[in-house]
Length: 184
Image (cartoon, rainbow, N blue to C red):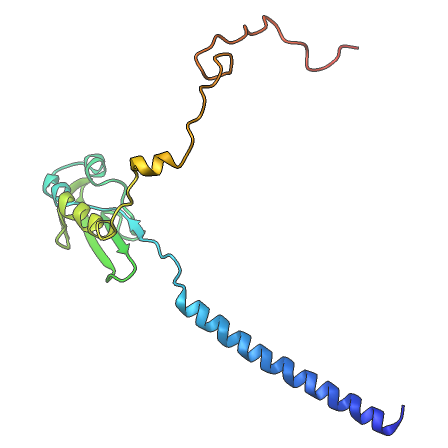
């Protein structure tokens, strides 16, 4: 190759490389702006056992382990070195709201409930209303069509009675079926 042609190829390669890098920067900036404009759906994360105030009030010293389990459910934590202690932990994490954590520890002595201690538990009604408050902010969609909206769609003709699913009698089932494998 001639020297002037070689320098033109080098210059052309340099120009293409520079244009490619500039395009990457603008694509990256556009994708970053798009990603910041679109927010992902975030779910509520519920972990552990919800224990209500009513359940705690039903606990009485002297109850057996099975009775406590019937009232509170299976404990989330049963410590290995503290066999006479059950721990119930409930965590609710919702987007845009502080995480709620409630703990209840149940102590046994000679296989009977001795005492329990923990956080103040909400009533079931309070807990359900706190969950429903998030959903009530969004207005439910209108699911009924007006007469004007219905007129836009033509009425469907009645389906013939011999089609399946229209309360028509179906053909009787065979008394026997052919064998699945041939007998040789």
